[in-house]
Length: 223
Ligand code: ADP
Ligand code: MG
Image (cartoon, rainbow, N blue to C red):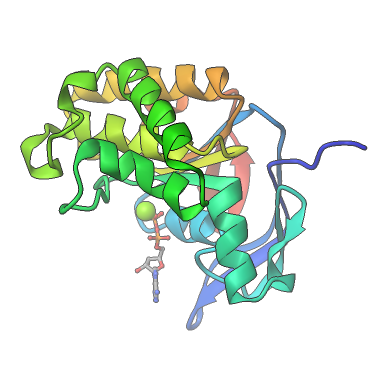
């Protein structure tokens, strides 16, 4: 049996009112492949990412995550598919403020029903790997931006999803912290065999990706 691609879309289109953001988008991501999606502010990058990650429904076209066709799943099945197949990294981290660093990383494993000893071992290994073991019991408000993003990356990869979606992962970090986070994203996706689809303004960030596209006037142009 051939293994399903982490991500595939066909003929994807989305408009808001009279404005078409993108139309006829086709894309495939191979296992472990990293792809950068560049484009001007407001060009529709985040919306495309939301359609690809099952957060928003496209107007037309289809998306497959790990071989599952999203428009054929009901709400519960879609949520389960997303929990298993993807990890997400955001510009503003989106850590839960009432949970410690290690509890934030553990949460997706809990949602997947993993037994506690297994969860704990995985979280400890990730904290170590991310160089933040000493911050395990800190709350997000006590962490720097770079630390928060490393926690968020650990949370995204914890359940070993075939693909990570990242929307401007360095957009809220200073240059030095941004470079460190990019290096970690590159290394951890290699180590954990995850593909990456990253939305970014930054050519420097896009450099960790093997493939780069610009979203221009609603279609993808190879960069
Ligand atoms: P980017 O991530 O490239 O900056 P976005 O995908 O966030 O662009 O947004 C593209 C355009 O779509 C923007 O003009 C934005 O205002 C508009 N838009 C985004 N989400 C919505 C929505 N839910 N309803 C209406 N318009 C939206
Ligand atoms: Mg955006």
